Length: 98
Image (cartoon, rainbow, N blue to C red; front, side, top):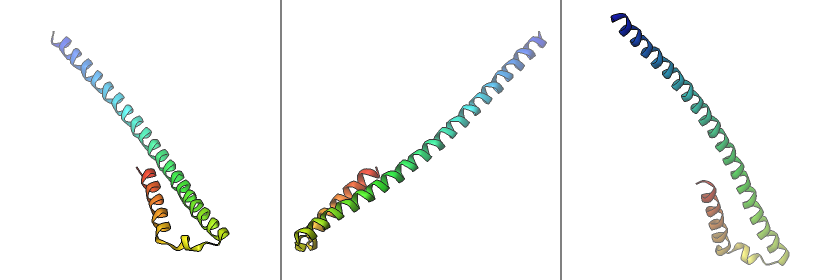
C-alpha cells in the first residue's frame, strides 16, 4: 500500500515537472513572439516617421513653389501660413505617434 502511494506521488511529481517544462516552453515562445512584434512595431514606426517627414517636406515645398510661381511671398511670410503649417504637422505627428 505504501509503495502504491509512493508511486502515485512520483507520478504526480513527474506530471508537474512535465507541466512546468511545457509552461516554460510556452513562455519562451511568447517572449520570442513579443520580441518579434516589438521589432515589427519599431520598423513600422520608423517607416511612418519617414513618410511623415516626406509628407511634411512635400507640403512645404508645394506651398513655397506655388508662392514663388505666383510671386506672392506675402502669404509665405505671414504668421497665418506658419500657424496652419505647424497645426498640420503637429496633427500628423500626433496621429502617427499614437
